[in-house]
Length: 347
Length: 290
Image (cartoon, rainbow over all chains, first blue to last red; front, top):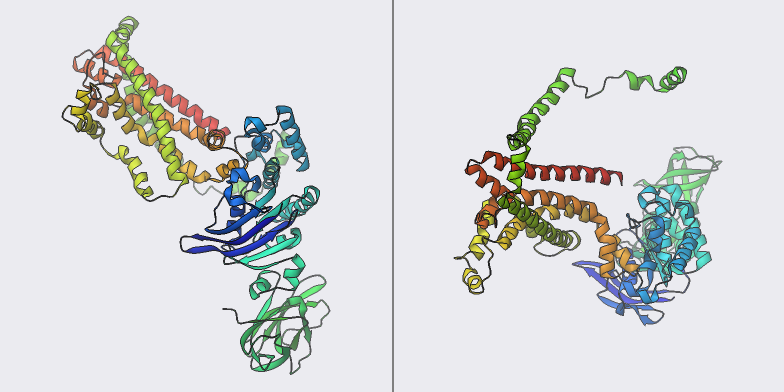
């Protein structure tokens, strides 16, 4: 199912949770809403589900106005952050819930309900635990029960709120991969909310980066990582070195000296230089480049982290280098960004 | 076997075995504390309870049963059970509604409502009874209207139920509010998103989530409802065989120097209280296991 969100706004008292959001989600896509807390991502998810109503704007499911329908009528599968499993029901009955509450005219016969639940428990690999209660399950298992329960009603869209947020790091990685596989199998349009960029980059087809109630960028994981549209996206996704610079006559100046970089069209005045640590190349001191002193070298294995103090203020940056870089603390070096972005000054 | 045991003991780090426990009080302190609490319990709880039963059976089982089967005593027991049944069921409903409103919605005046729920705990039961006399008594606000339509509230069952309701209102709500607050609304949202109607959500999710707390509140409510004296005394009118509940009946018998009969009825009340306690203990065990 396609979802179109047009100019949706939502305020909580004086706080603008969503300030005019436009988003199109394609059928069968797995989309991540990524942003820091308070960016409006969960509000947007709840509005799609019908758990929250926008103050203004449109939500269309396959071109139909979804705002005319309550959450009950929208046929969405919602997986809550803390799963919200029914603690007095077994795993089996939790999954069967959505099938049992249907009006009599649409309710499946008991045998069909049992079949469907068995199928779903199979899908989430929890068949042996069908008779257990939620309190007897691990976090990862609860998560999968919540997913099976949401899928039981054949939802037109699957919505997941911080699906891996409450799990420990190892289980989180496994479940991430598993969710991706599951999506390949069942191909239901899915939207999940996360504040973890790694999670979004690994799982999603497309990422919607949000900040302060606005969408900053929509794109594939590669897009948002390689071509961040705004300073916020650059900093939020992947590691970033940010240096305060000045633009003069189309060239970048750091610490009052030109460092041989073009301004990428940013107007004269103060600006910021954004570089990934892996894109900085360390070389011998040179006048026309960023200059600094090696402070510390750390790390194990094939790569090293080199801490360099730049310019007269000694702004500390961390740069990747290989284990045989041959650097020592105290040594003067220059840094040359292989790739970089200039954004006009961050407010 | 002993070899195995010693092998296991050997693995326990010596630091854990040897160090004296941080809060290991001297033996005599521990015994003193236990003894004081036991003596206190005996003097203030066990002895009086035993005295009730001793007095009740002072003249043997025959007169005891005689006192209990006296028509006035039977009427008092019946009335007490009836009043308790009505007020507990009504307070289950009201308490659940109030707790729901407080725990799951935000609205202006919520703080005042929370405070008001505790009011019956803090005001004297006599006042709880008097307010109804002021409202529904012959000289009260609605007195003329009620008399004109021949509706009896004061000195009748409705008045007794009202007074009991007021006094016992906090028990169910107090028990539910913290639990419902902690559980939040996600379970309900999940149920509705799965297609459940409002009623289905209530009966299949909300109610099961609070059933133990609800039952617990009902038990406490019941104990108080059966034992309430002050508020009921004001509105009852003490009509023998009609508006006397057990506590009132006990007092009347006592004032008439019918000690044995008075204690016989008291023993039934005490027994009901003990049953409530046992039910409460069983309930606590069940909830801890589930």
